[in-house]
Length: 388
Image (tube, rainbow, N blue to C red; front, side, top):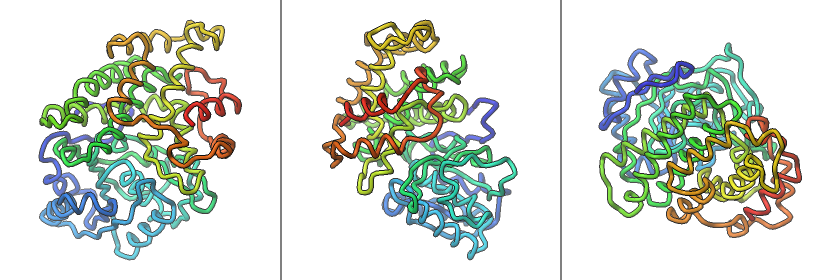
């Protein structure tokens, strides 16, 4: 699969790829730490197949299967200690975005000694030592298999943000669309919306390029066509391949064009202890308000931002809306959210109104990549309040 030249990851895309990961890993190490979640990969037989392929290729294996849905720094530290004690010289991430993000950070912390929490919110230097990483996504959404970042919660500071750096690019990504077939409907919807968000943001971000816009347009069409029948239970290899491809395209956009304000707002949800909401569902909570406010500002509505009215993002929103068969992108997103069963509010997830200030204080990262880069605390509060 052809990627942007700025993304060094080699992607092996195709059905049955899980059973070929041993060949993909050969030459990168001799003893693999396989990092995965607590249940899904084992329940569906993916872990046993991965281990069999690696062992058949002559690699030794050690399993770390304690990654949470929103990975924590203490889990990464535990995995890194296991890697060092076992003499692992390769990390294989097997799972959704959480498992892949944890695997990336374990690959670093196994070399640096940690603690991982100190890396949260940091951009790593090119000379940071790291174990080679093989990424095997079992969902179609995060695109983490081709990105240079990982989202982790620092359990000491109660702070959730990104660990970033060129060294976090996986050496190889093995993308097997058949693995999507076992996803529960809710997980399928959440992860696909994550891919949708990566496409939209990669098209309107300040760092967007002609190439990222082309990828975004392809991805939103793939998702719009493939997701509804899959959610209705009409499974097909073609639909699974479409979603898997859209996820990779979105991941490349994350790596090259970056993300916008919704990702910063969603990451800050990690600052609320006990708030258990997936990345994709968190984005769905925030997206209607962010899209509506941004479209209004860009096109001269009541929140108009003057010179921003002529920004390329305004034209791109119109293109995406047309591709999605809607007058506006926020209407198309609301329709997608409703059909996917992702329509809820922060208060439905146990968030109190007074928690909004905590969320605002937890926002970190690059806000200037948003198409409307003048976000202040009042605007962040407005977006959270509307999601609440």
